Length: 439
Image (cartoon, rainbow, N blue to C red; front, top):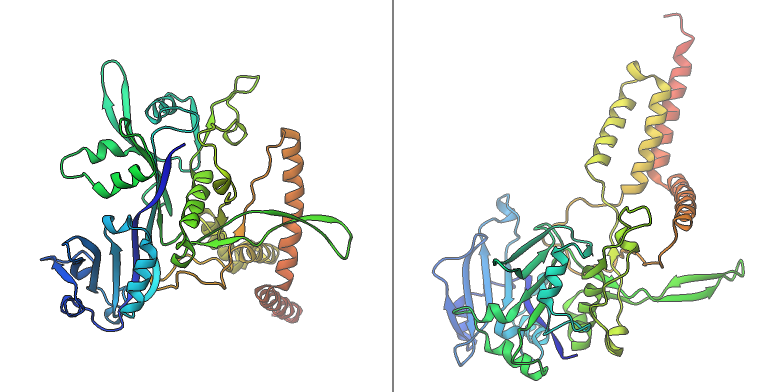
């Protein structure tokens, strides 16, 4: 099947070595188009142009809100964004990294990266417009990203959908499927450089070209290729299955090659473009979505098949329920007069479990945090084969026992555990000393 993967948006958050103003870049030989007004975050915004007058890079600098004044940005903070035309050159990431190095910028993080795939129809020969009609007719169900927004037309004969976006505004990754040909046909929206990539990829000129697009925010940092490796445990002699070290960090240096961009795209496709047939059990109740058959939209070639990635789950974060529970347990432990000493001990023990579970979780990430931090290695989640109901119940029981054992061992090794235990022991000793006094 003819198709092509491209970068459609690339924006990085950097720090300037010194004020790099429009006059500086004019002195470097660039044509500069300055916007009369800045942006909500920056006082200055301008676009660098090539000799033909085409925009190549957008610069936003001089933030309003500085940390030294109680704000959020450090001095020298700025954002650099490739123009859409520049995203479709042969090596856009290499060009941007060369530009950053030439002018001594310091990369802090990748603010946004969009990867897209353009195609005329799915590998199963199904038309995307028909696929969306069947999806909204509840023939298919989507795994992950339950929230969506749809655009289309409601005709008397049939409803036509031309654009759907899955994921909320707070999602680290959002997914879109839309008719790109229809978008380019709108007045002022034609982009010849995109049509040129279609021609190079041998996409048909007489059919509508559709696009699947994944937009990644700065919070999305890394994924891995979950390759299972069988090893023999030296101590026990048992055969165990481990995960191979095939981590791919979503940093610009790891996406220089086109194959790596294709790999990352199909990693996201495997996880976020997962549709299942709506199936029912013998009793008429809907079957769990993850146990339904997958809709075979794409047949991957050898290169694409070799890059089957799995999603990483970062350190679990306490939710609203857990925070309320922690606060309530703290109140119980502090109010011995009402609850008694046994309740205090029980509350502190249960708080230890929460602390062990969430003590390393961070609720906030500073804006200037380094994009790729090798000290923070997320966990790996591997997709297993579908299980029967009986197998699933046994699996839950086994995992529950293993989880409790791991938590117990972790708590006993935790400095927080020993600190609380020492405090409780001292309190008990204090009570023993005072209970026999005559007053």
